[in-house]
Length: 300
Image 1 (cartoon, rainbow, N blue to C red):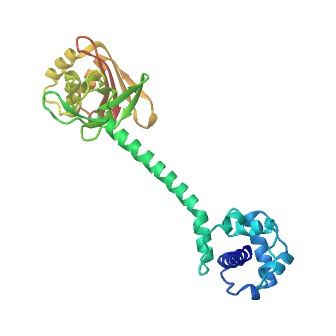
Image 2: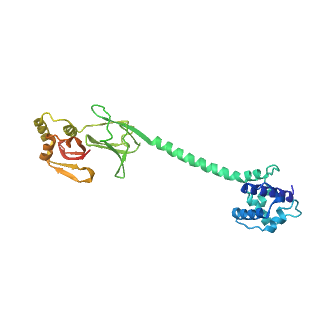
Image 3: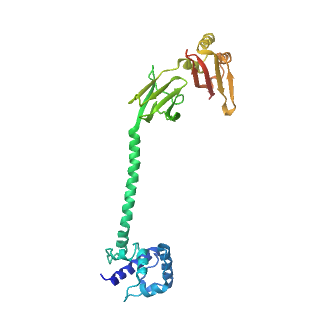
């Protein structure tokens, strides 16, 4: 195919490309109007950042036959307009006379599709690998009460992963936690003794039993139950509460807190009131003899 024949194919491609940009135009170069020429000039400017003249279009695109090949710089501009890098690439495109535009643009976009496909594959592969690797590094641990094997309530028990001495809370759901296989785990609750687990030292742990804090559970029972024998309860409180126990009751609606010593708090527990049953223990500190030295309570 001669360069002139290739130029005829370029003219077809330019016309077809223009029709895609301006669908209402259904004619040929023969009935290409002055307005169409202005539209084409603007479109070429937008897509290639190059300017062409009306005269050039009248001289080289509108005629049915061309005796001379136009300047290469102009051929480059219109070759870029139809989707190739320039005239040299356009000449080497396999051109089908029945659908010249599709073949040219298909060939010129192959590299783009290939690159896009590779990037997409890498991104999805990376995401999949991260998810797989993360799941492969997770370990599920079941928490249970040591003696009864009952499930552990998430409302009164908190689980933390320690990273660089910073505790980060993890979700406790259905008495189970999911943590990294190399994590350091701390389990805290006012009703169980604090438990620390270093999975680097004790790997493959799938179940952890929490030992109840007996005095805390007795105290919570006093708060929630109806009084039957206040004298017995008073004697029990004397035993489980340290003489210097401090009790902080956090008031609702950010109204502050109330402070009670041993006698004041014991008296409050002995005389049941509606507000007493709304108290919830959230923190307890025991001494070496297991007596309670500190209690933090919130009002529900």
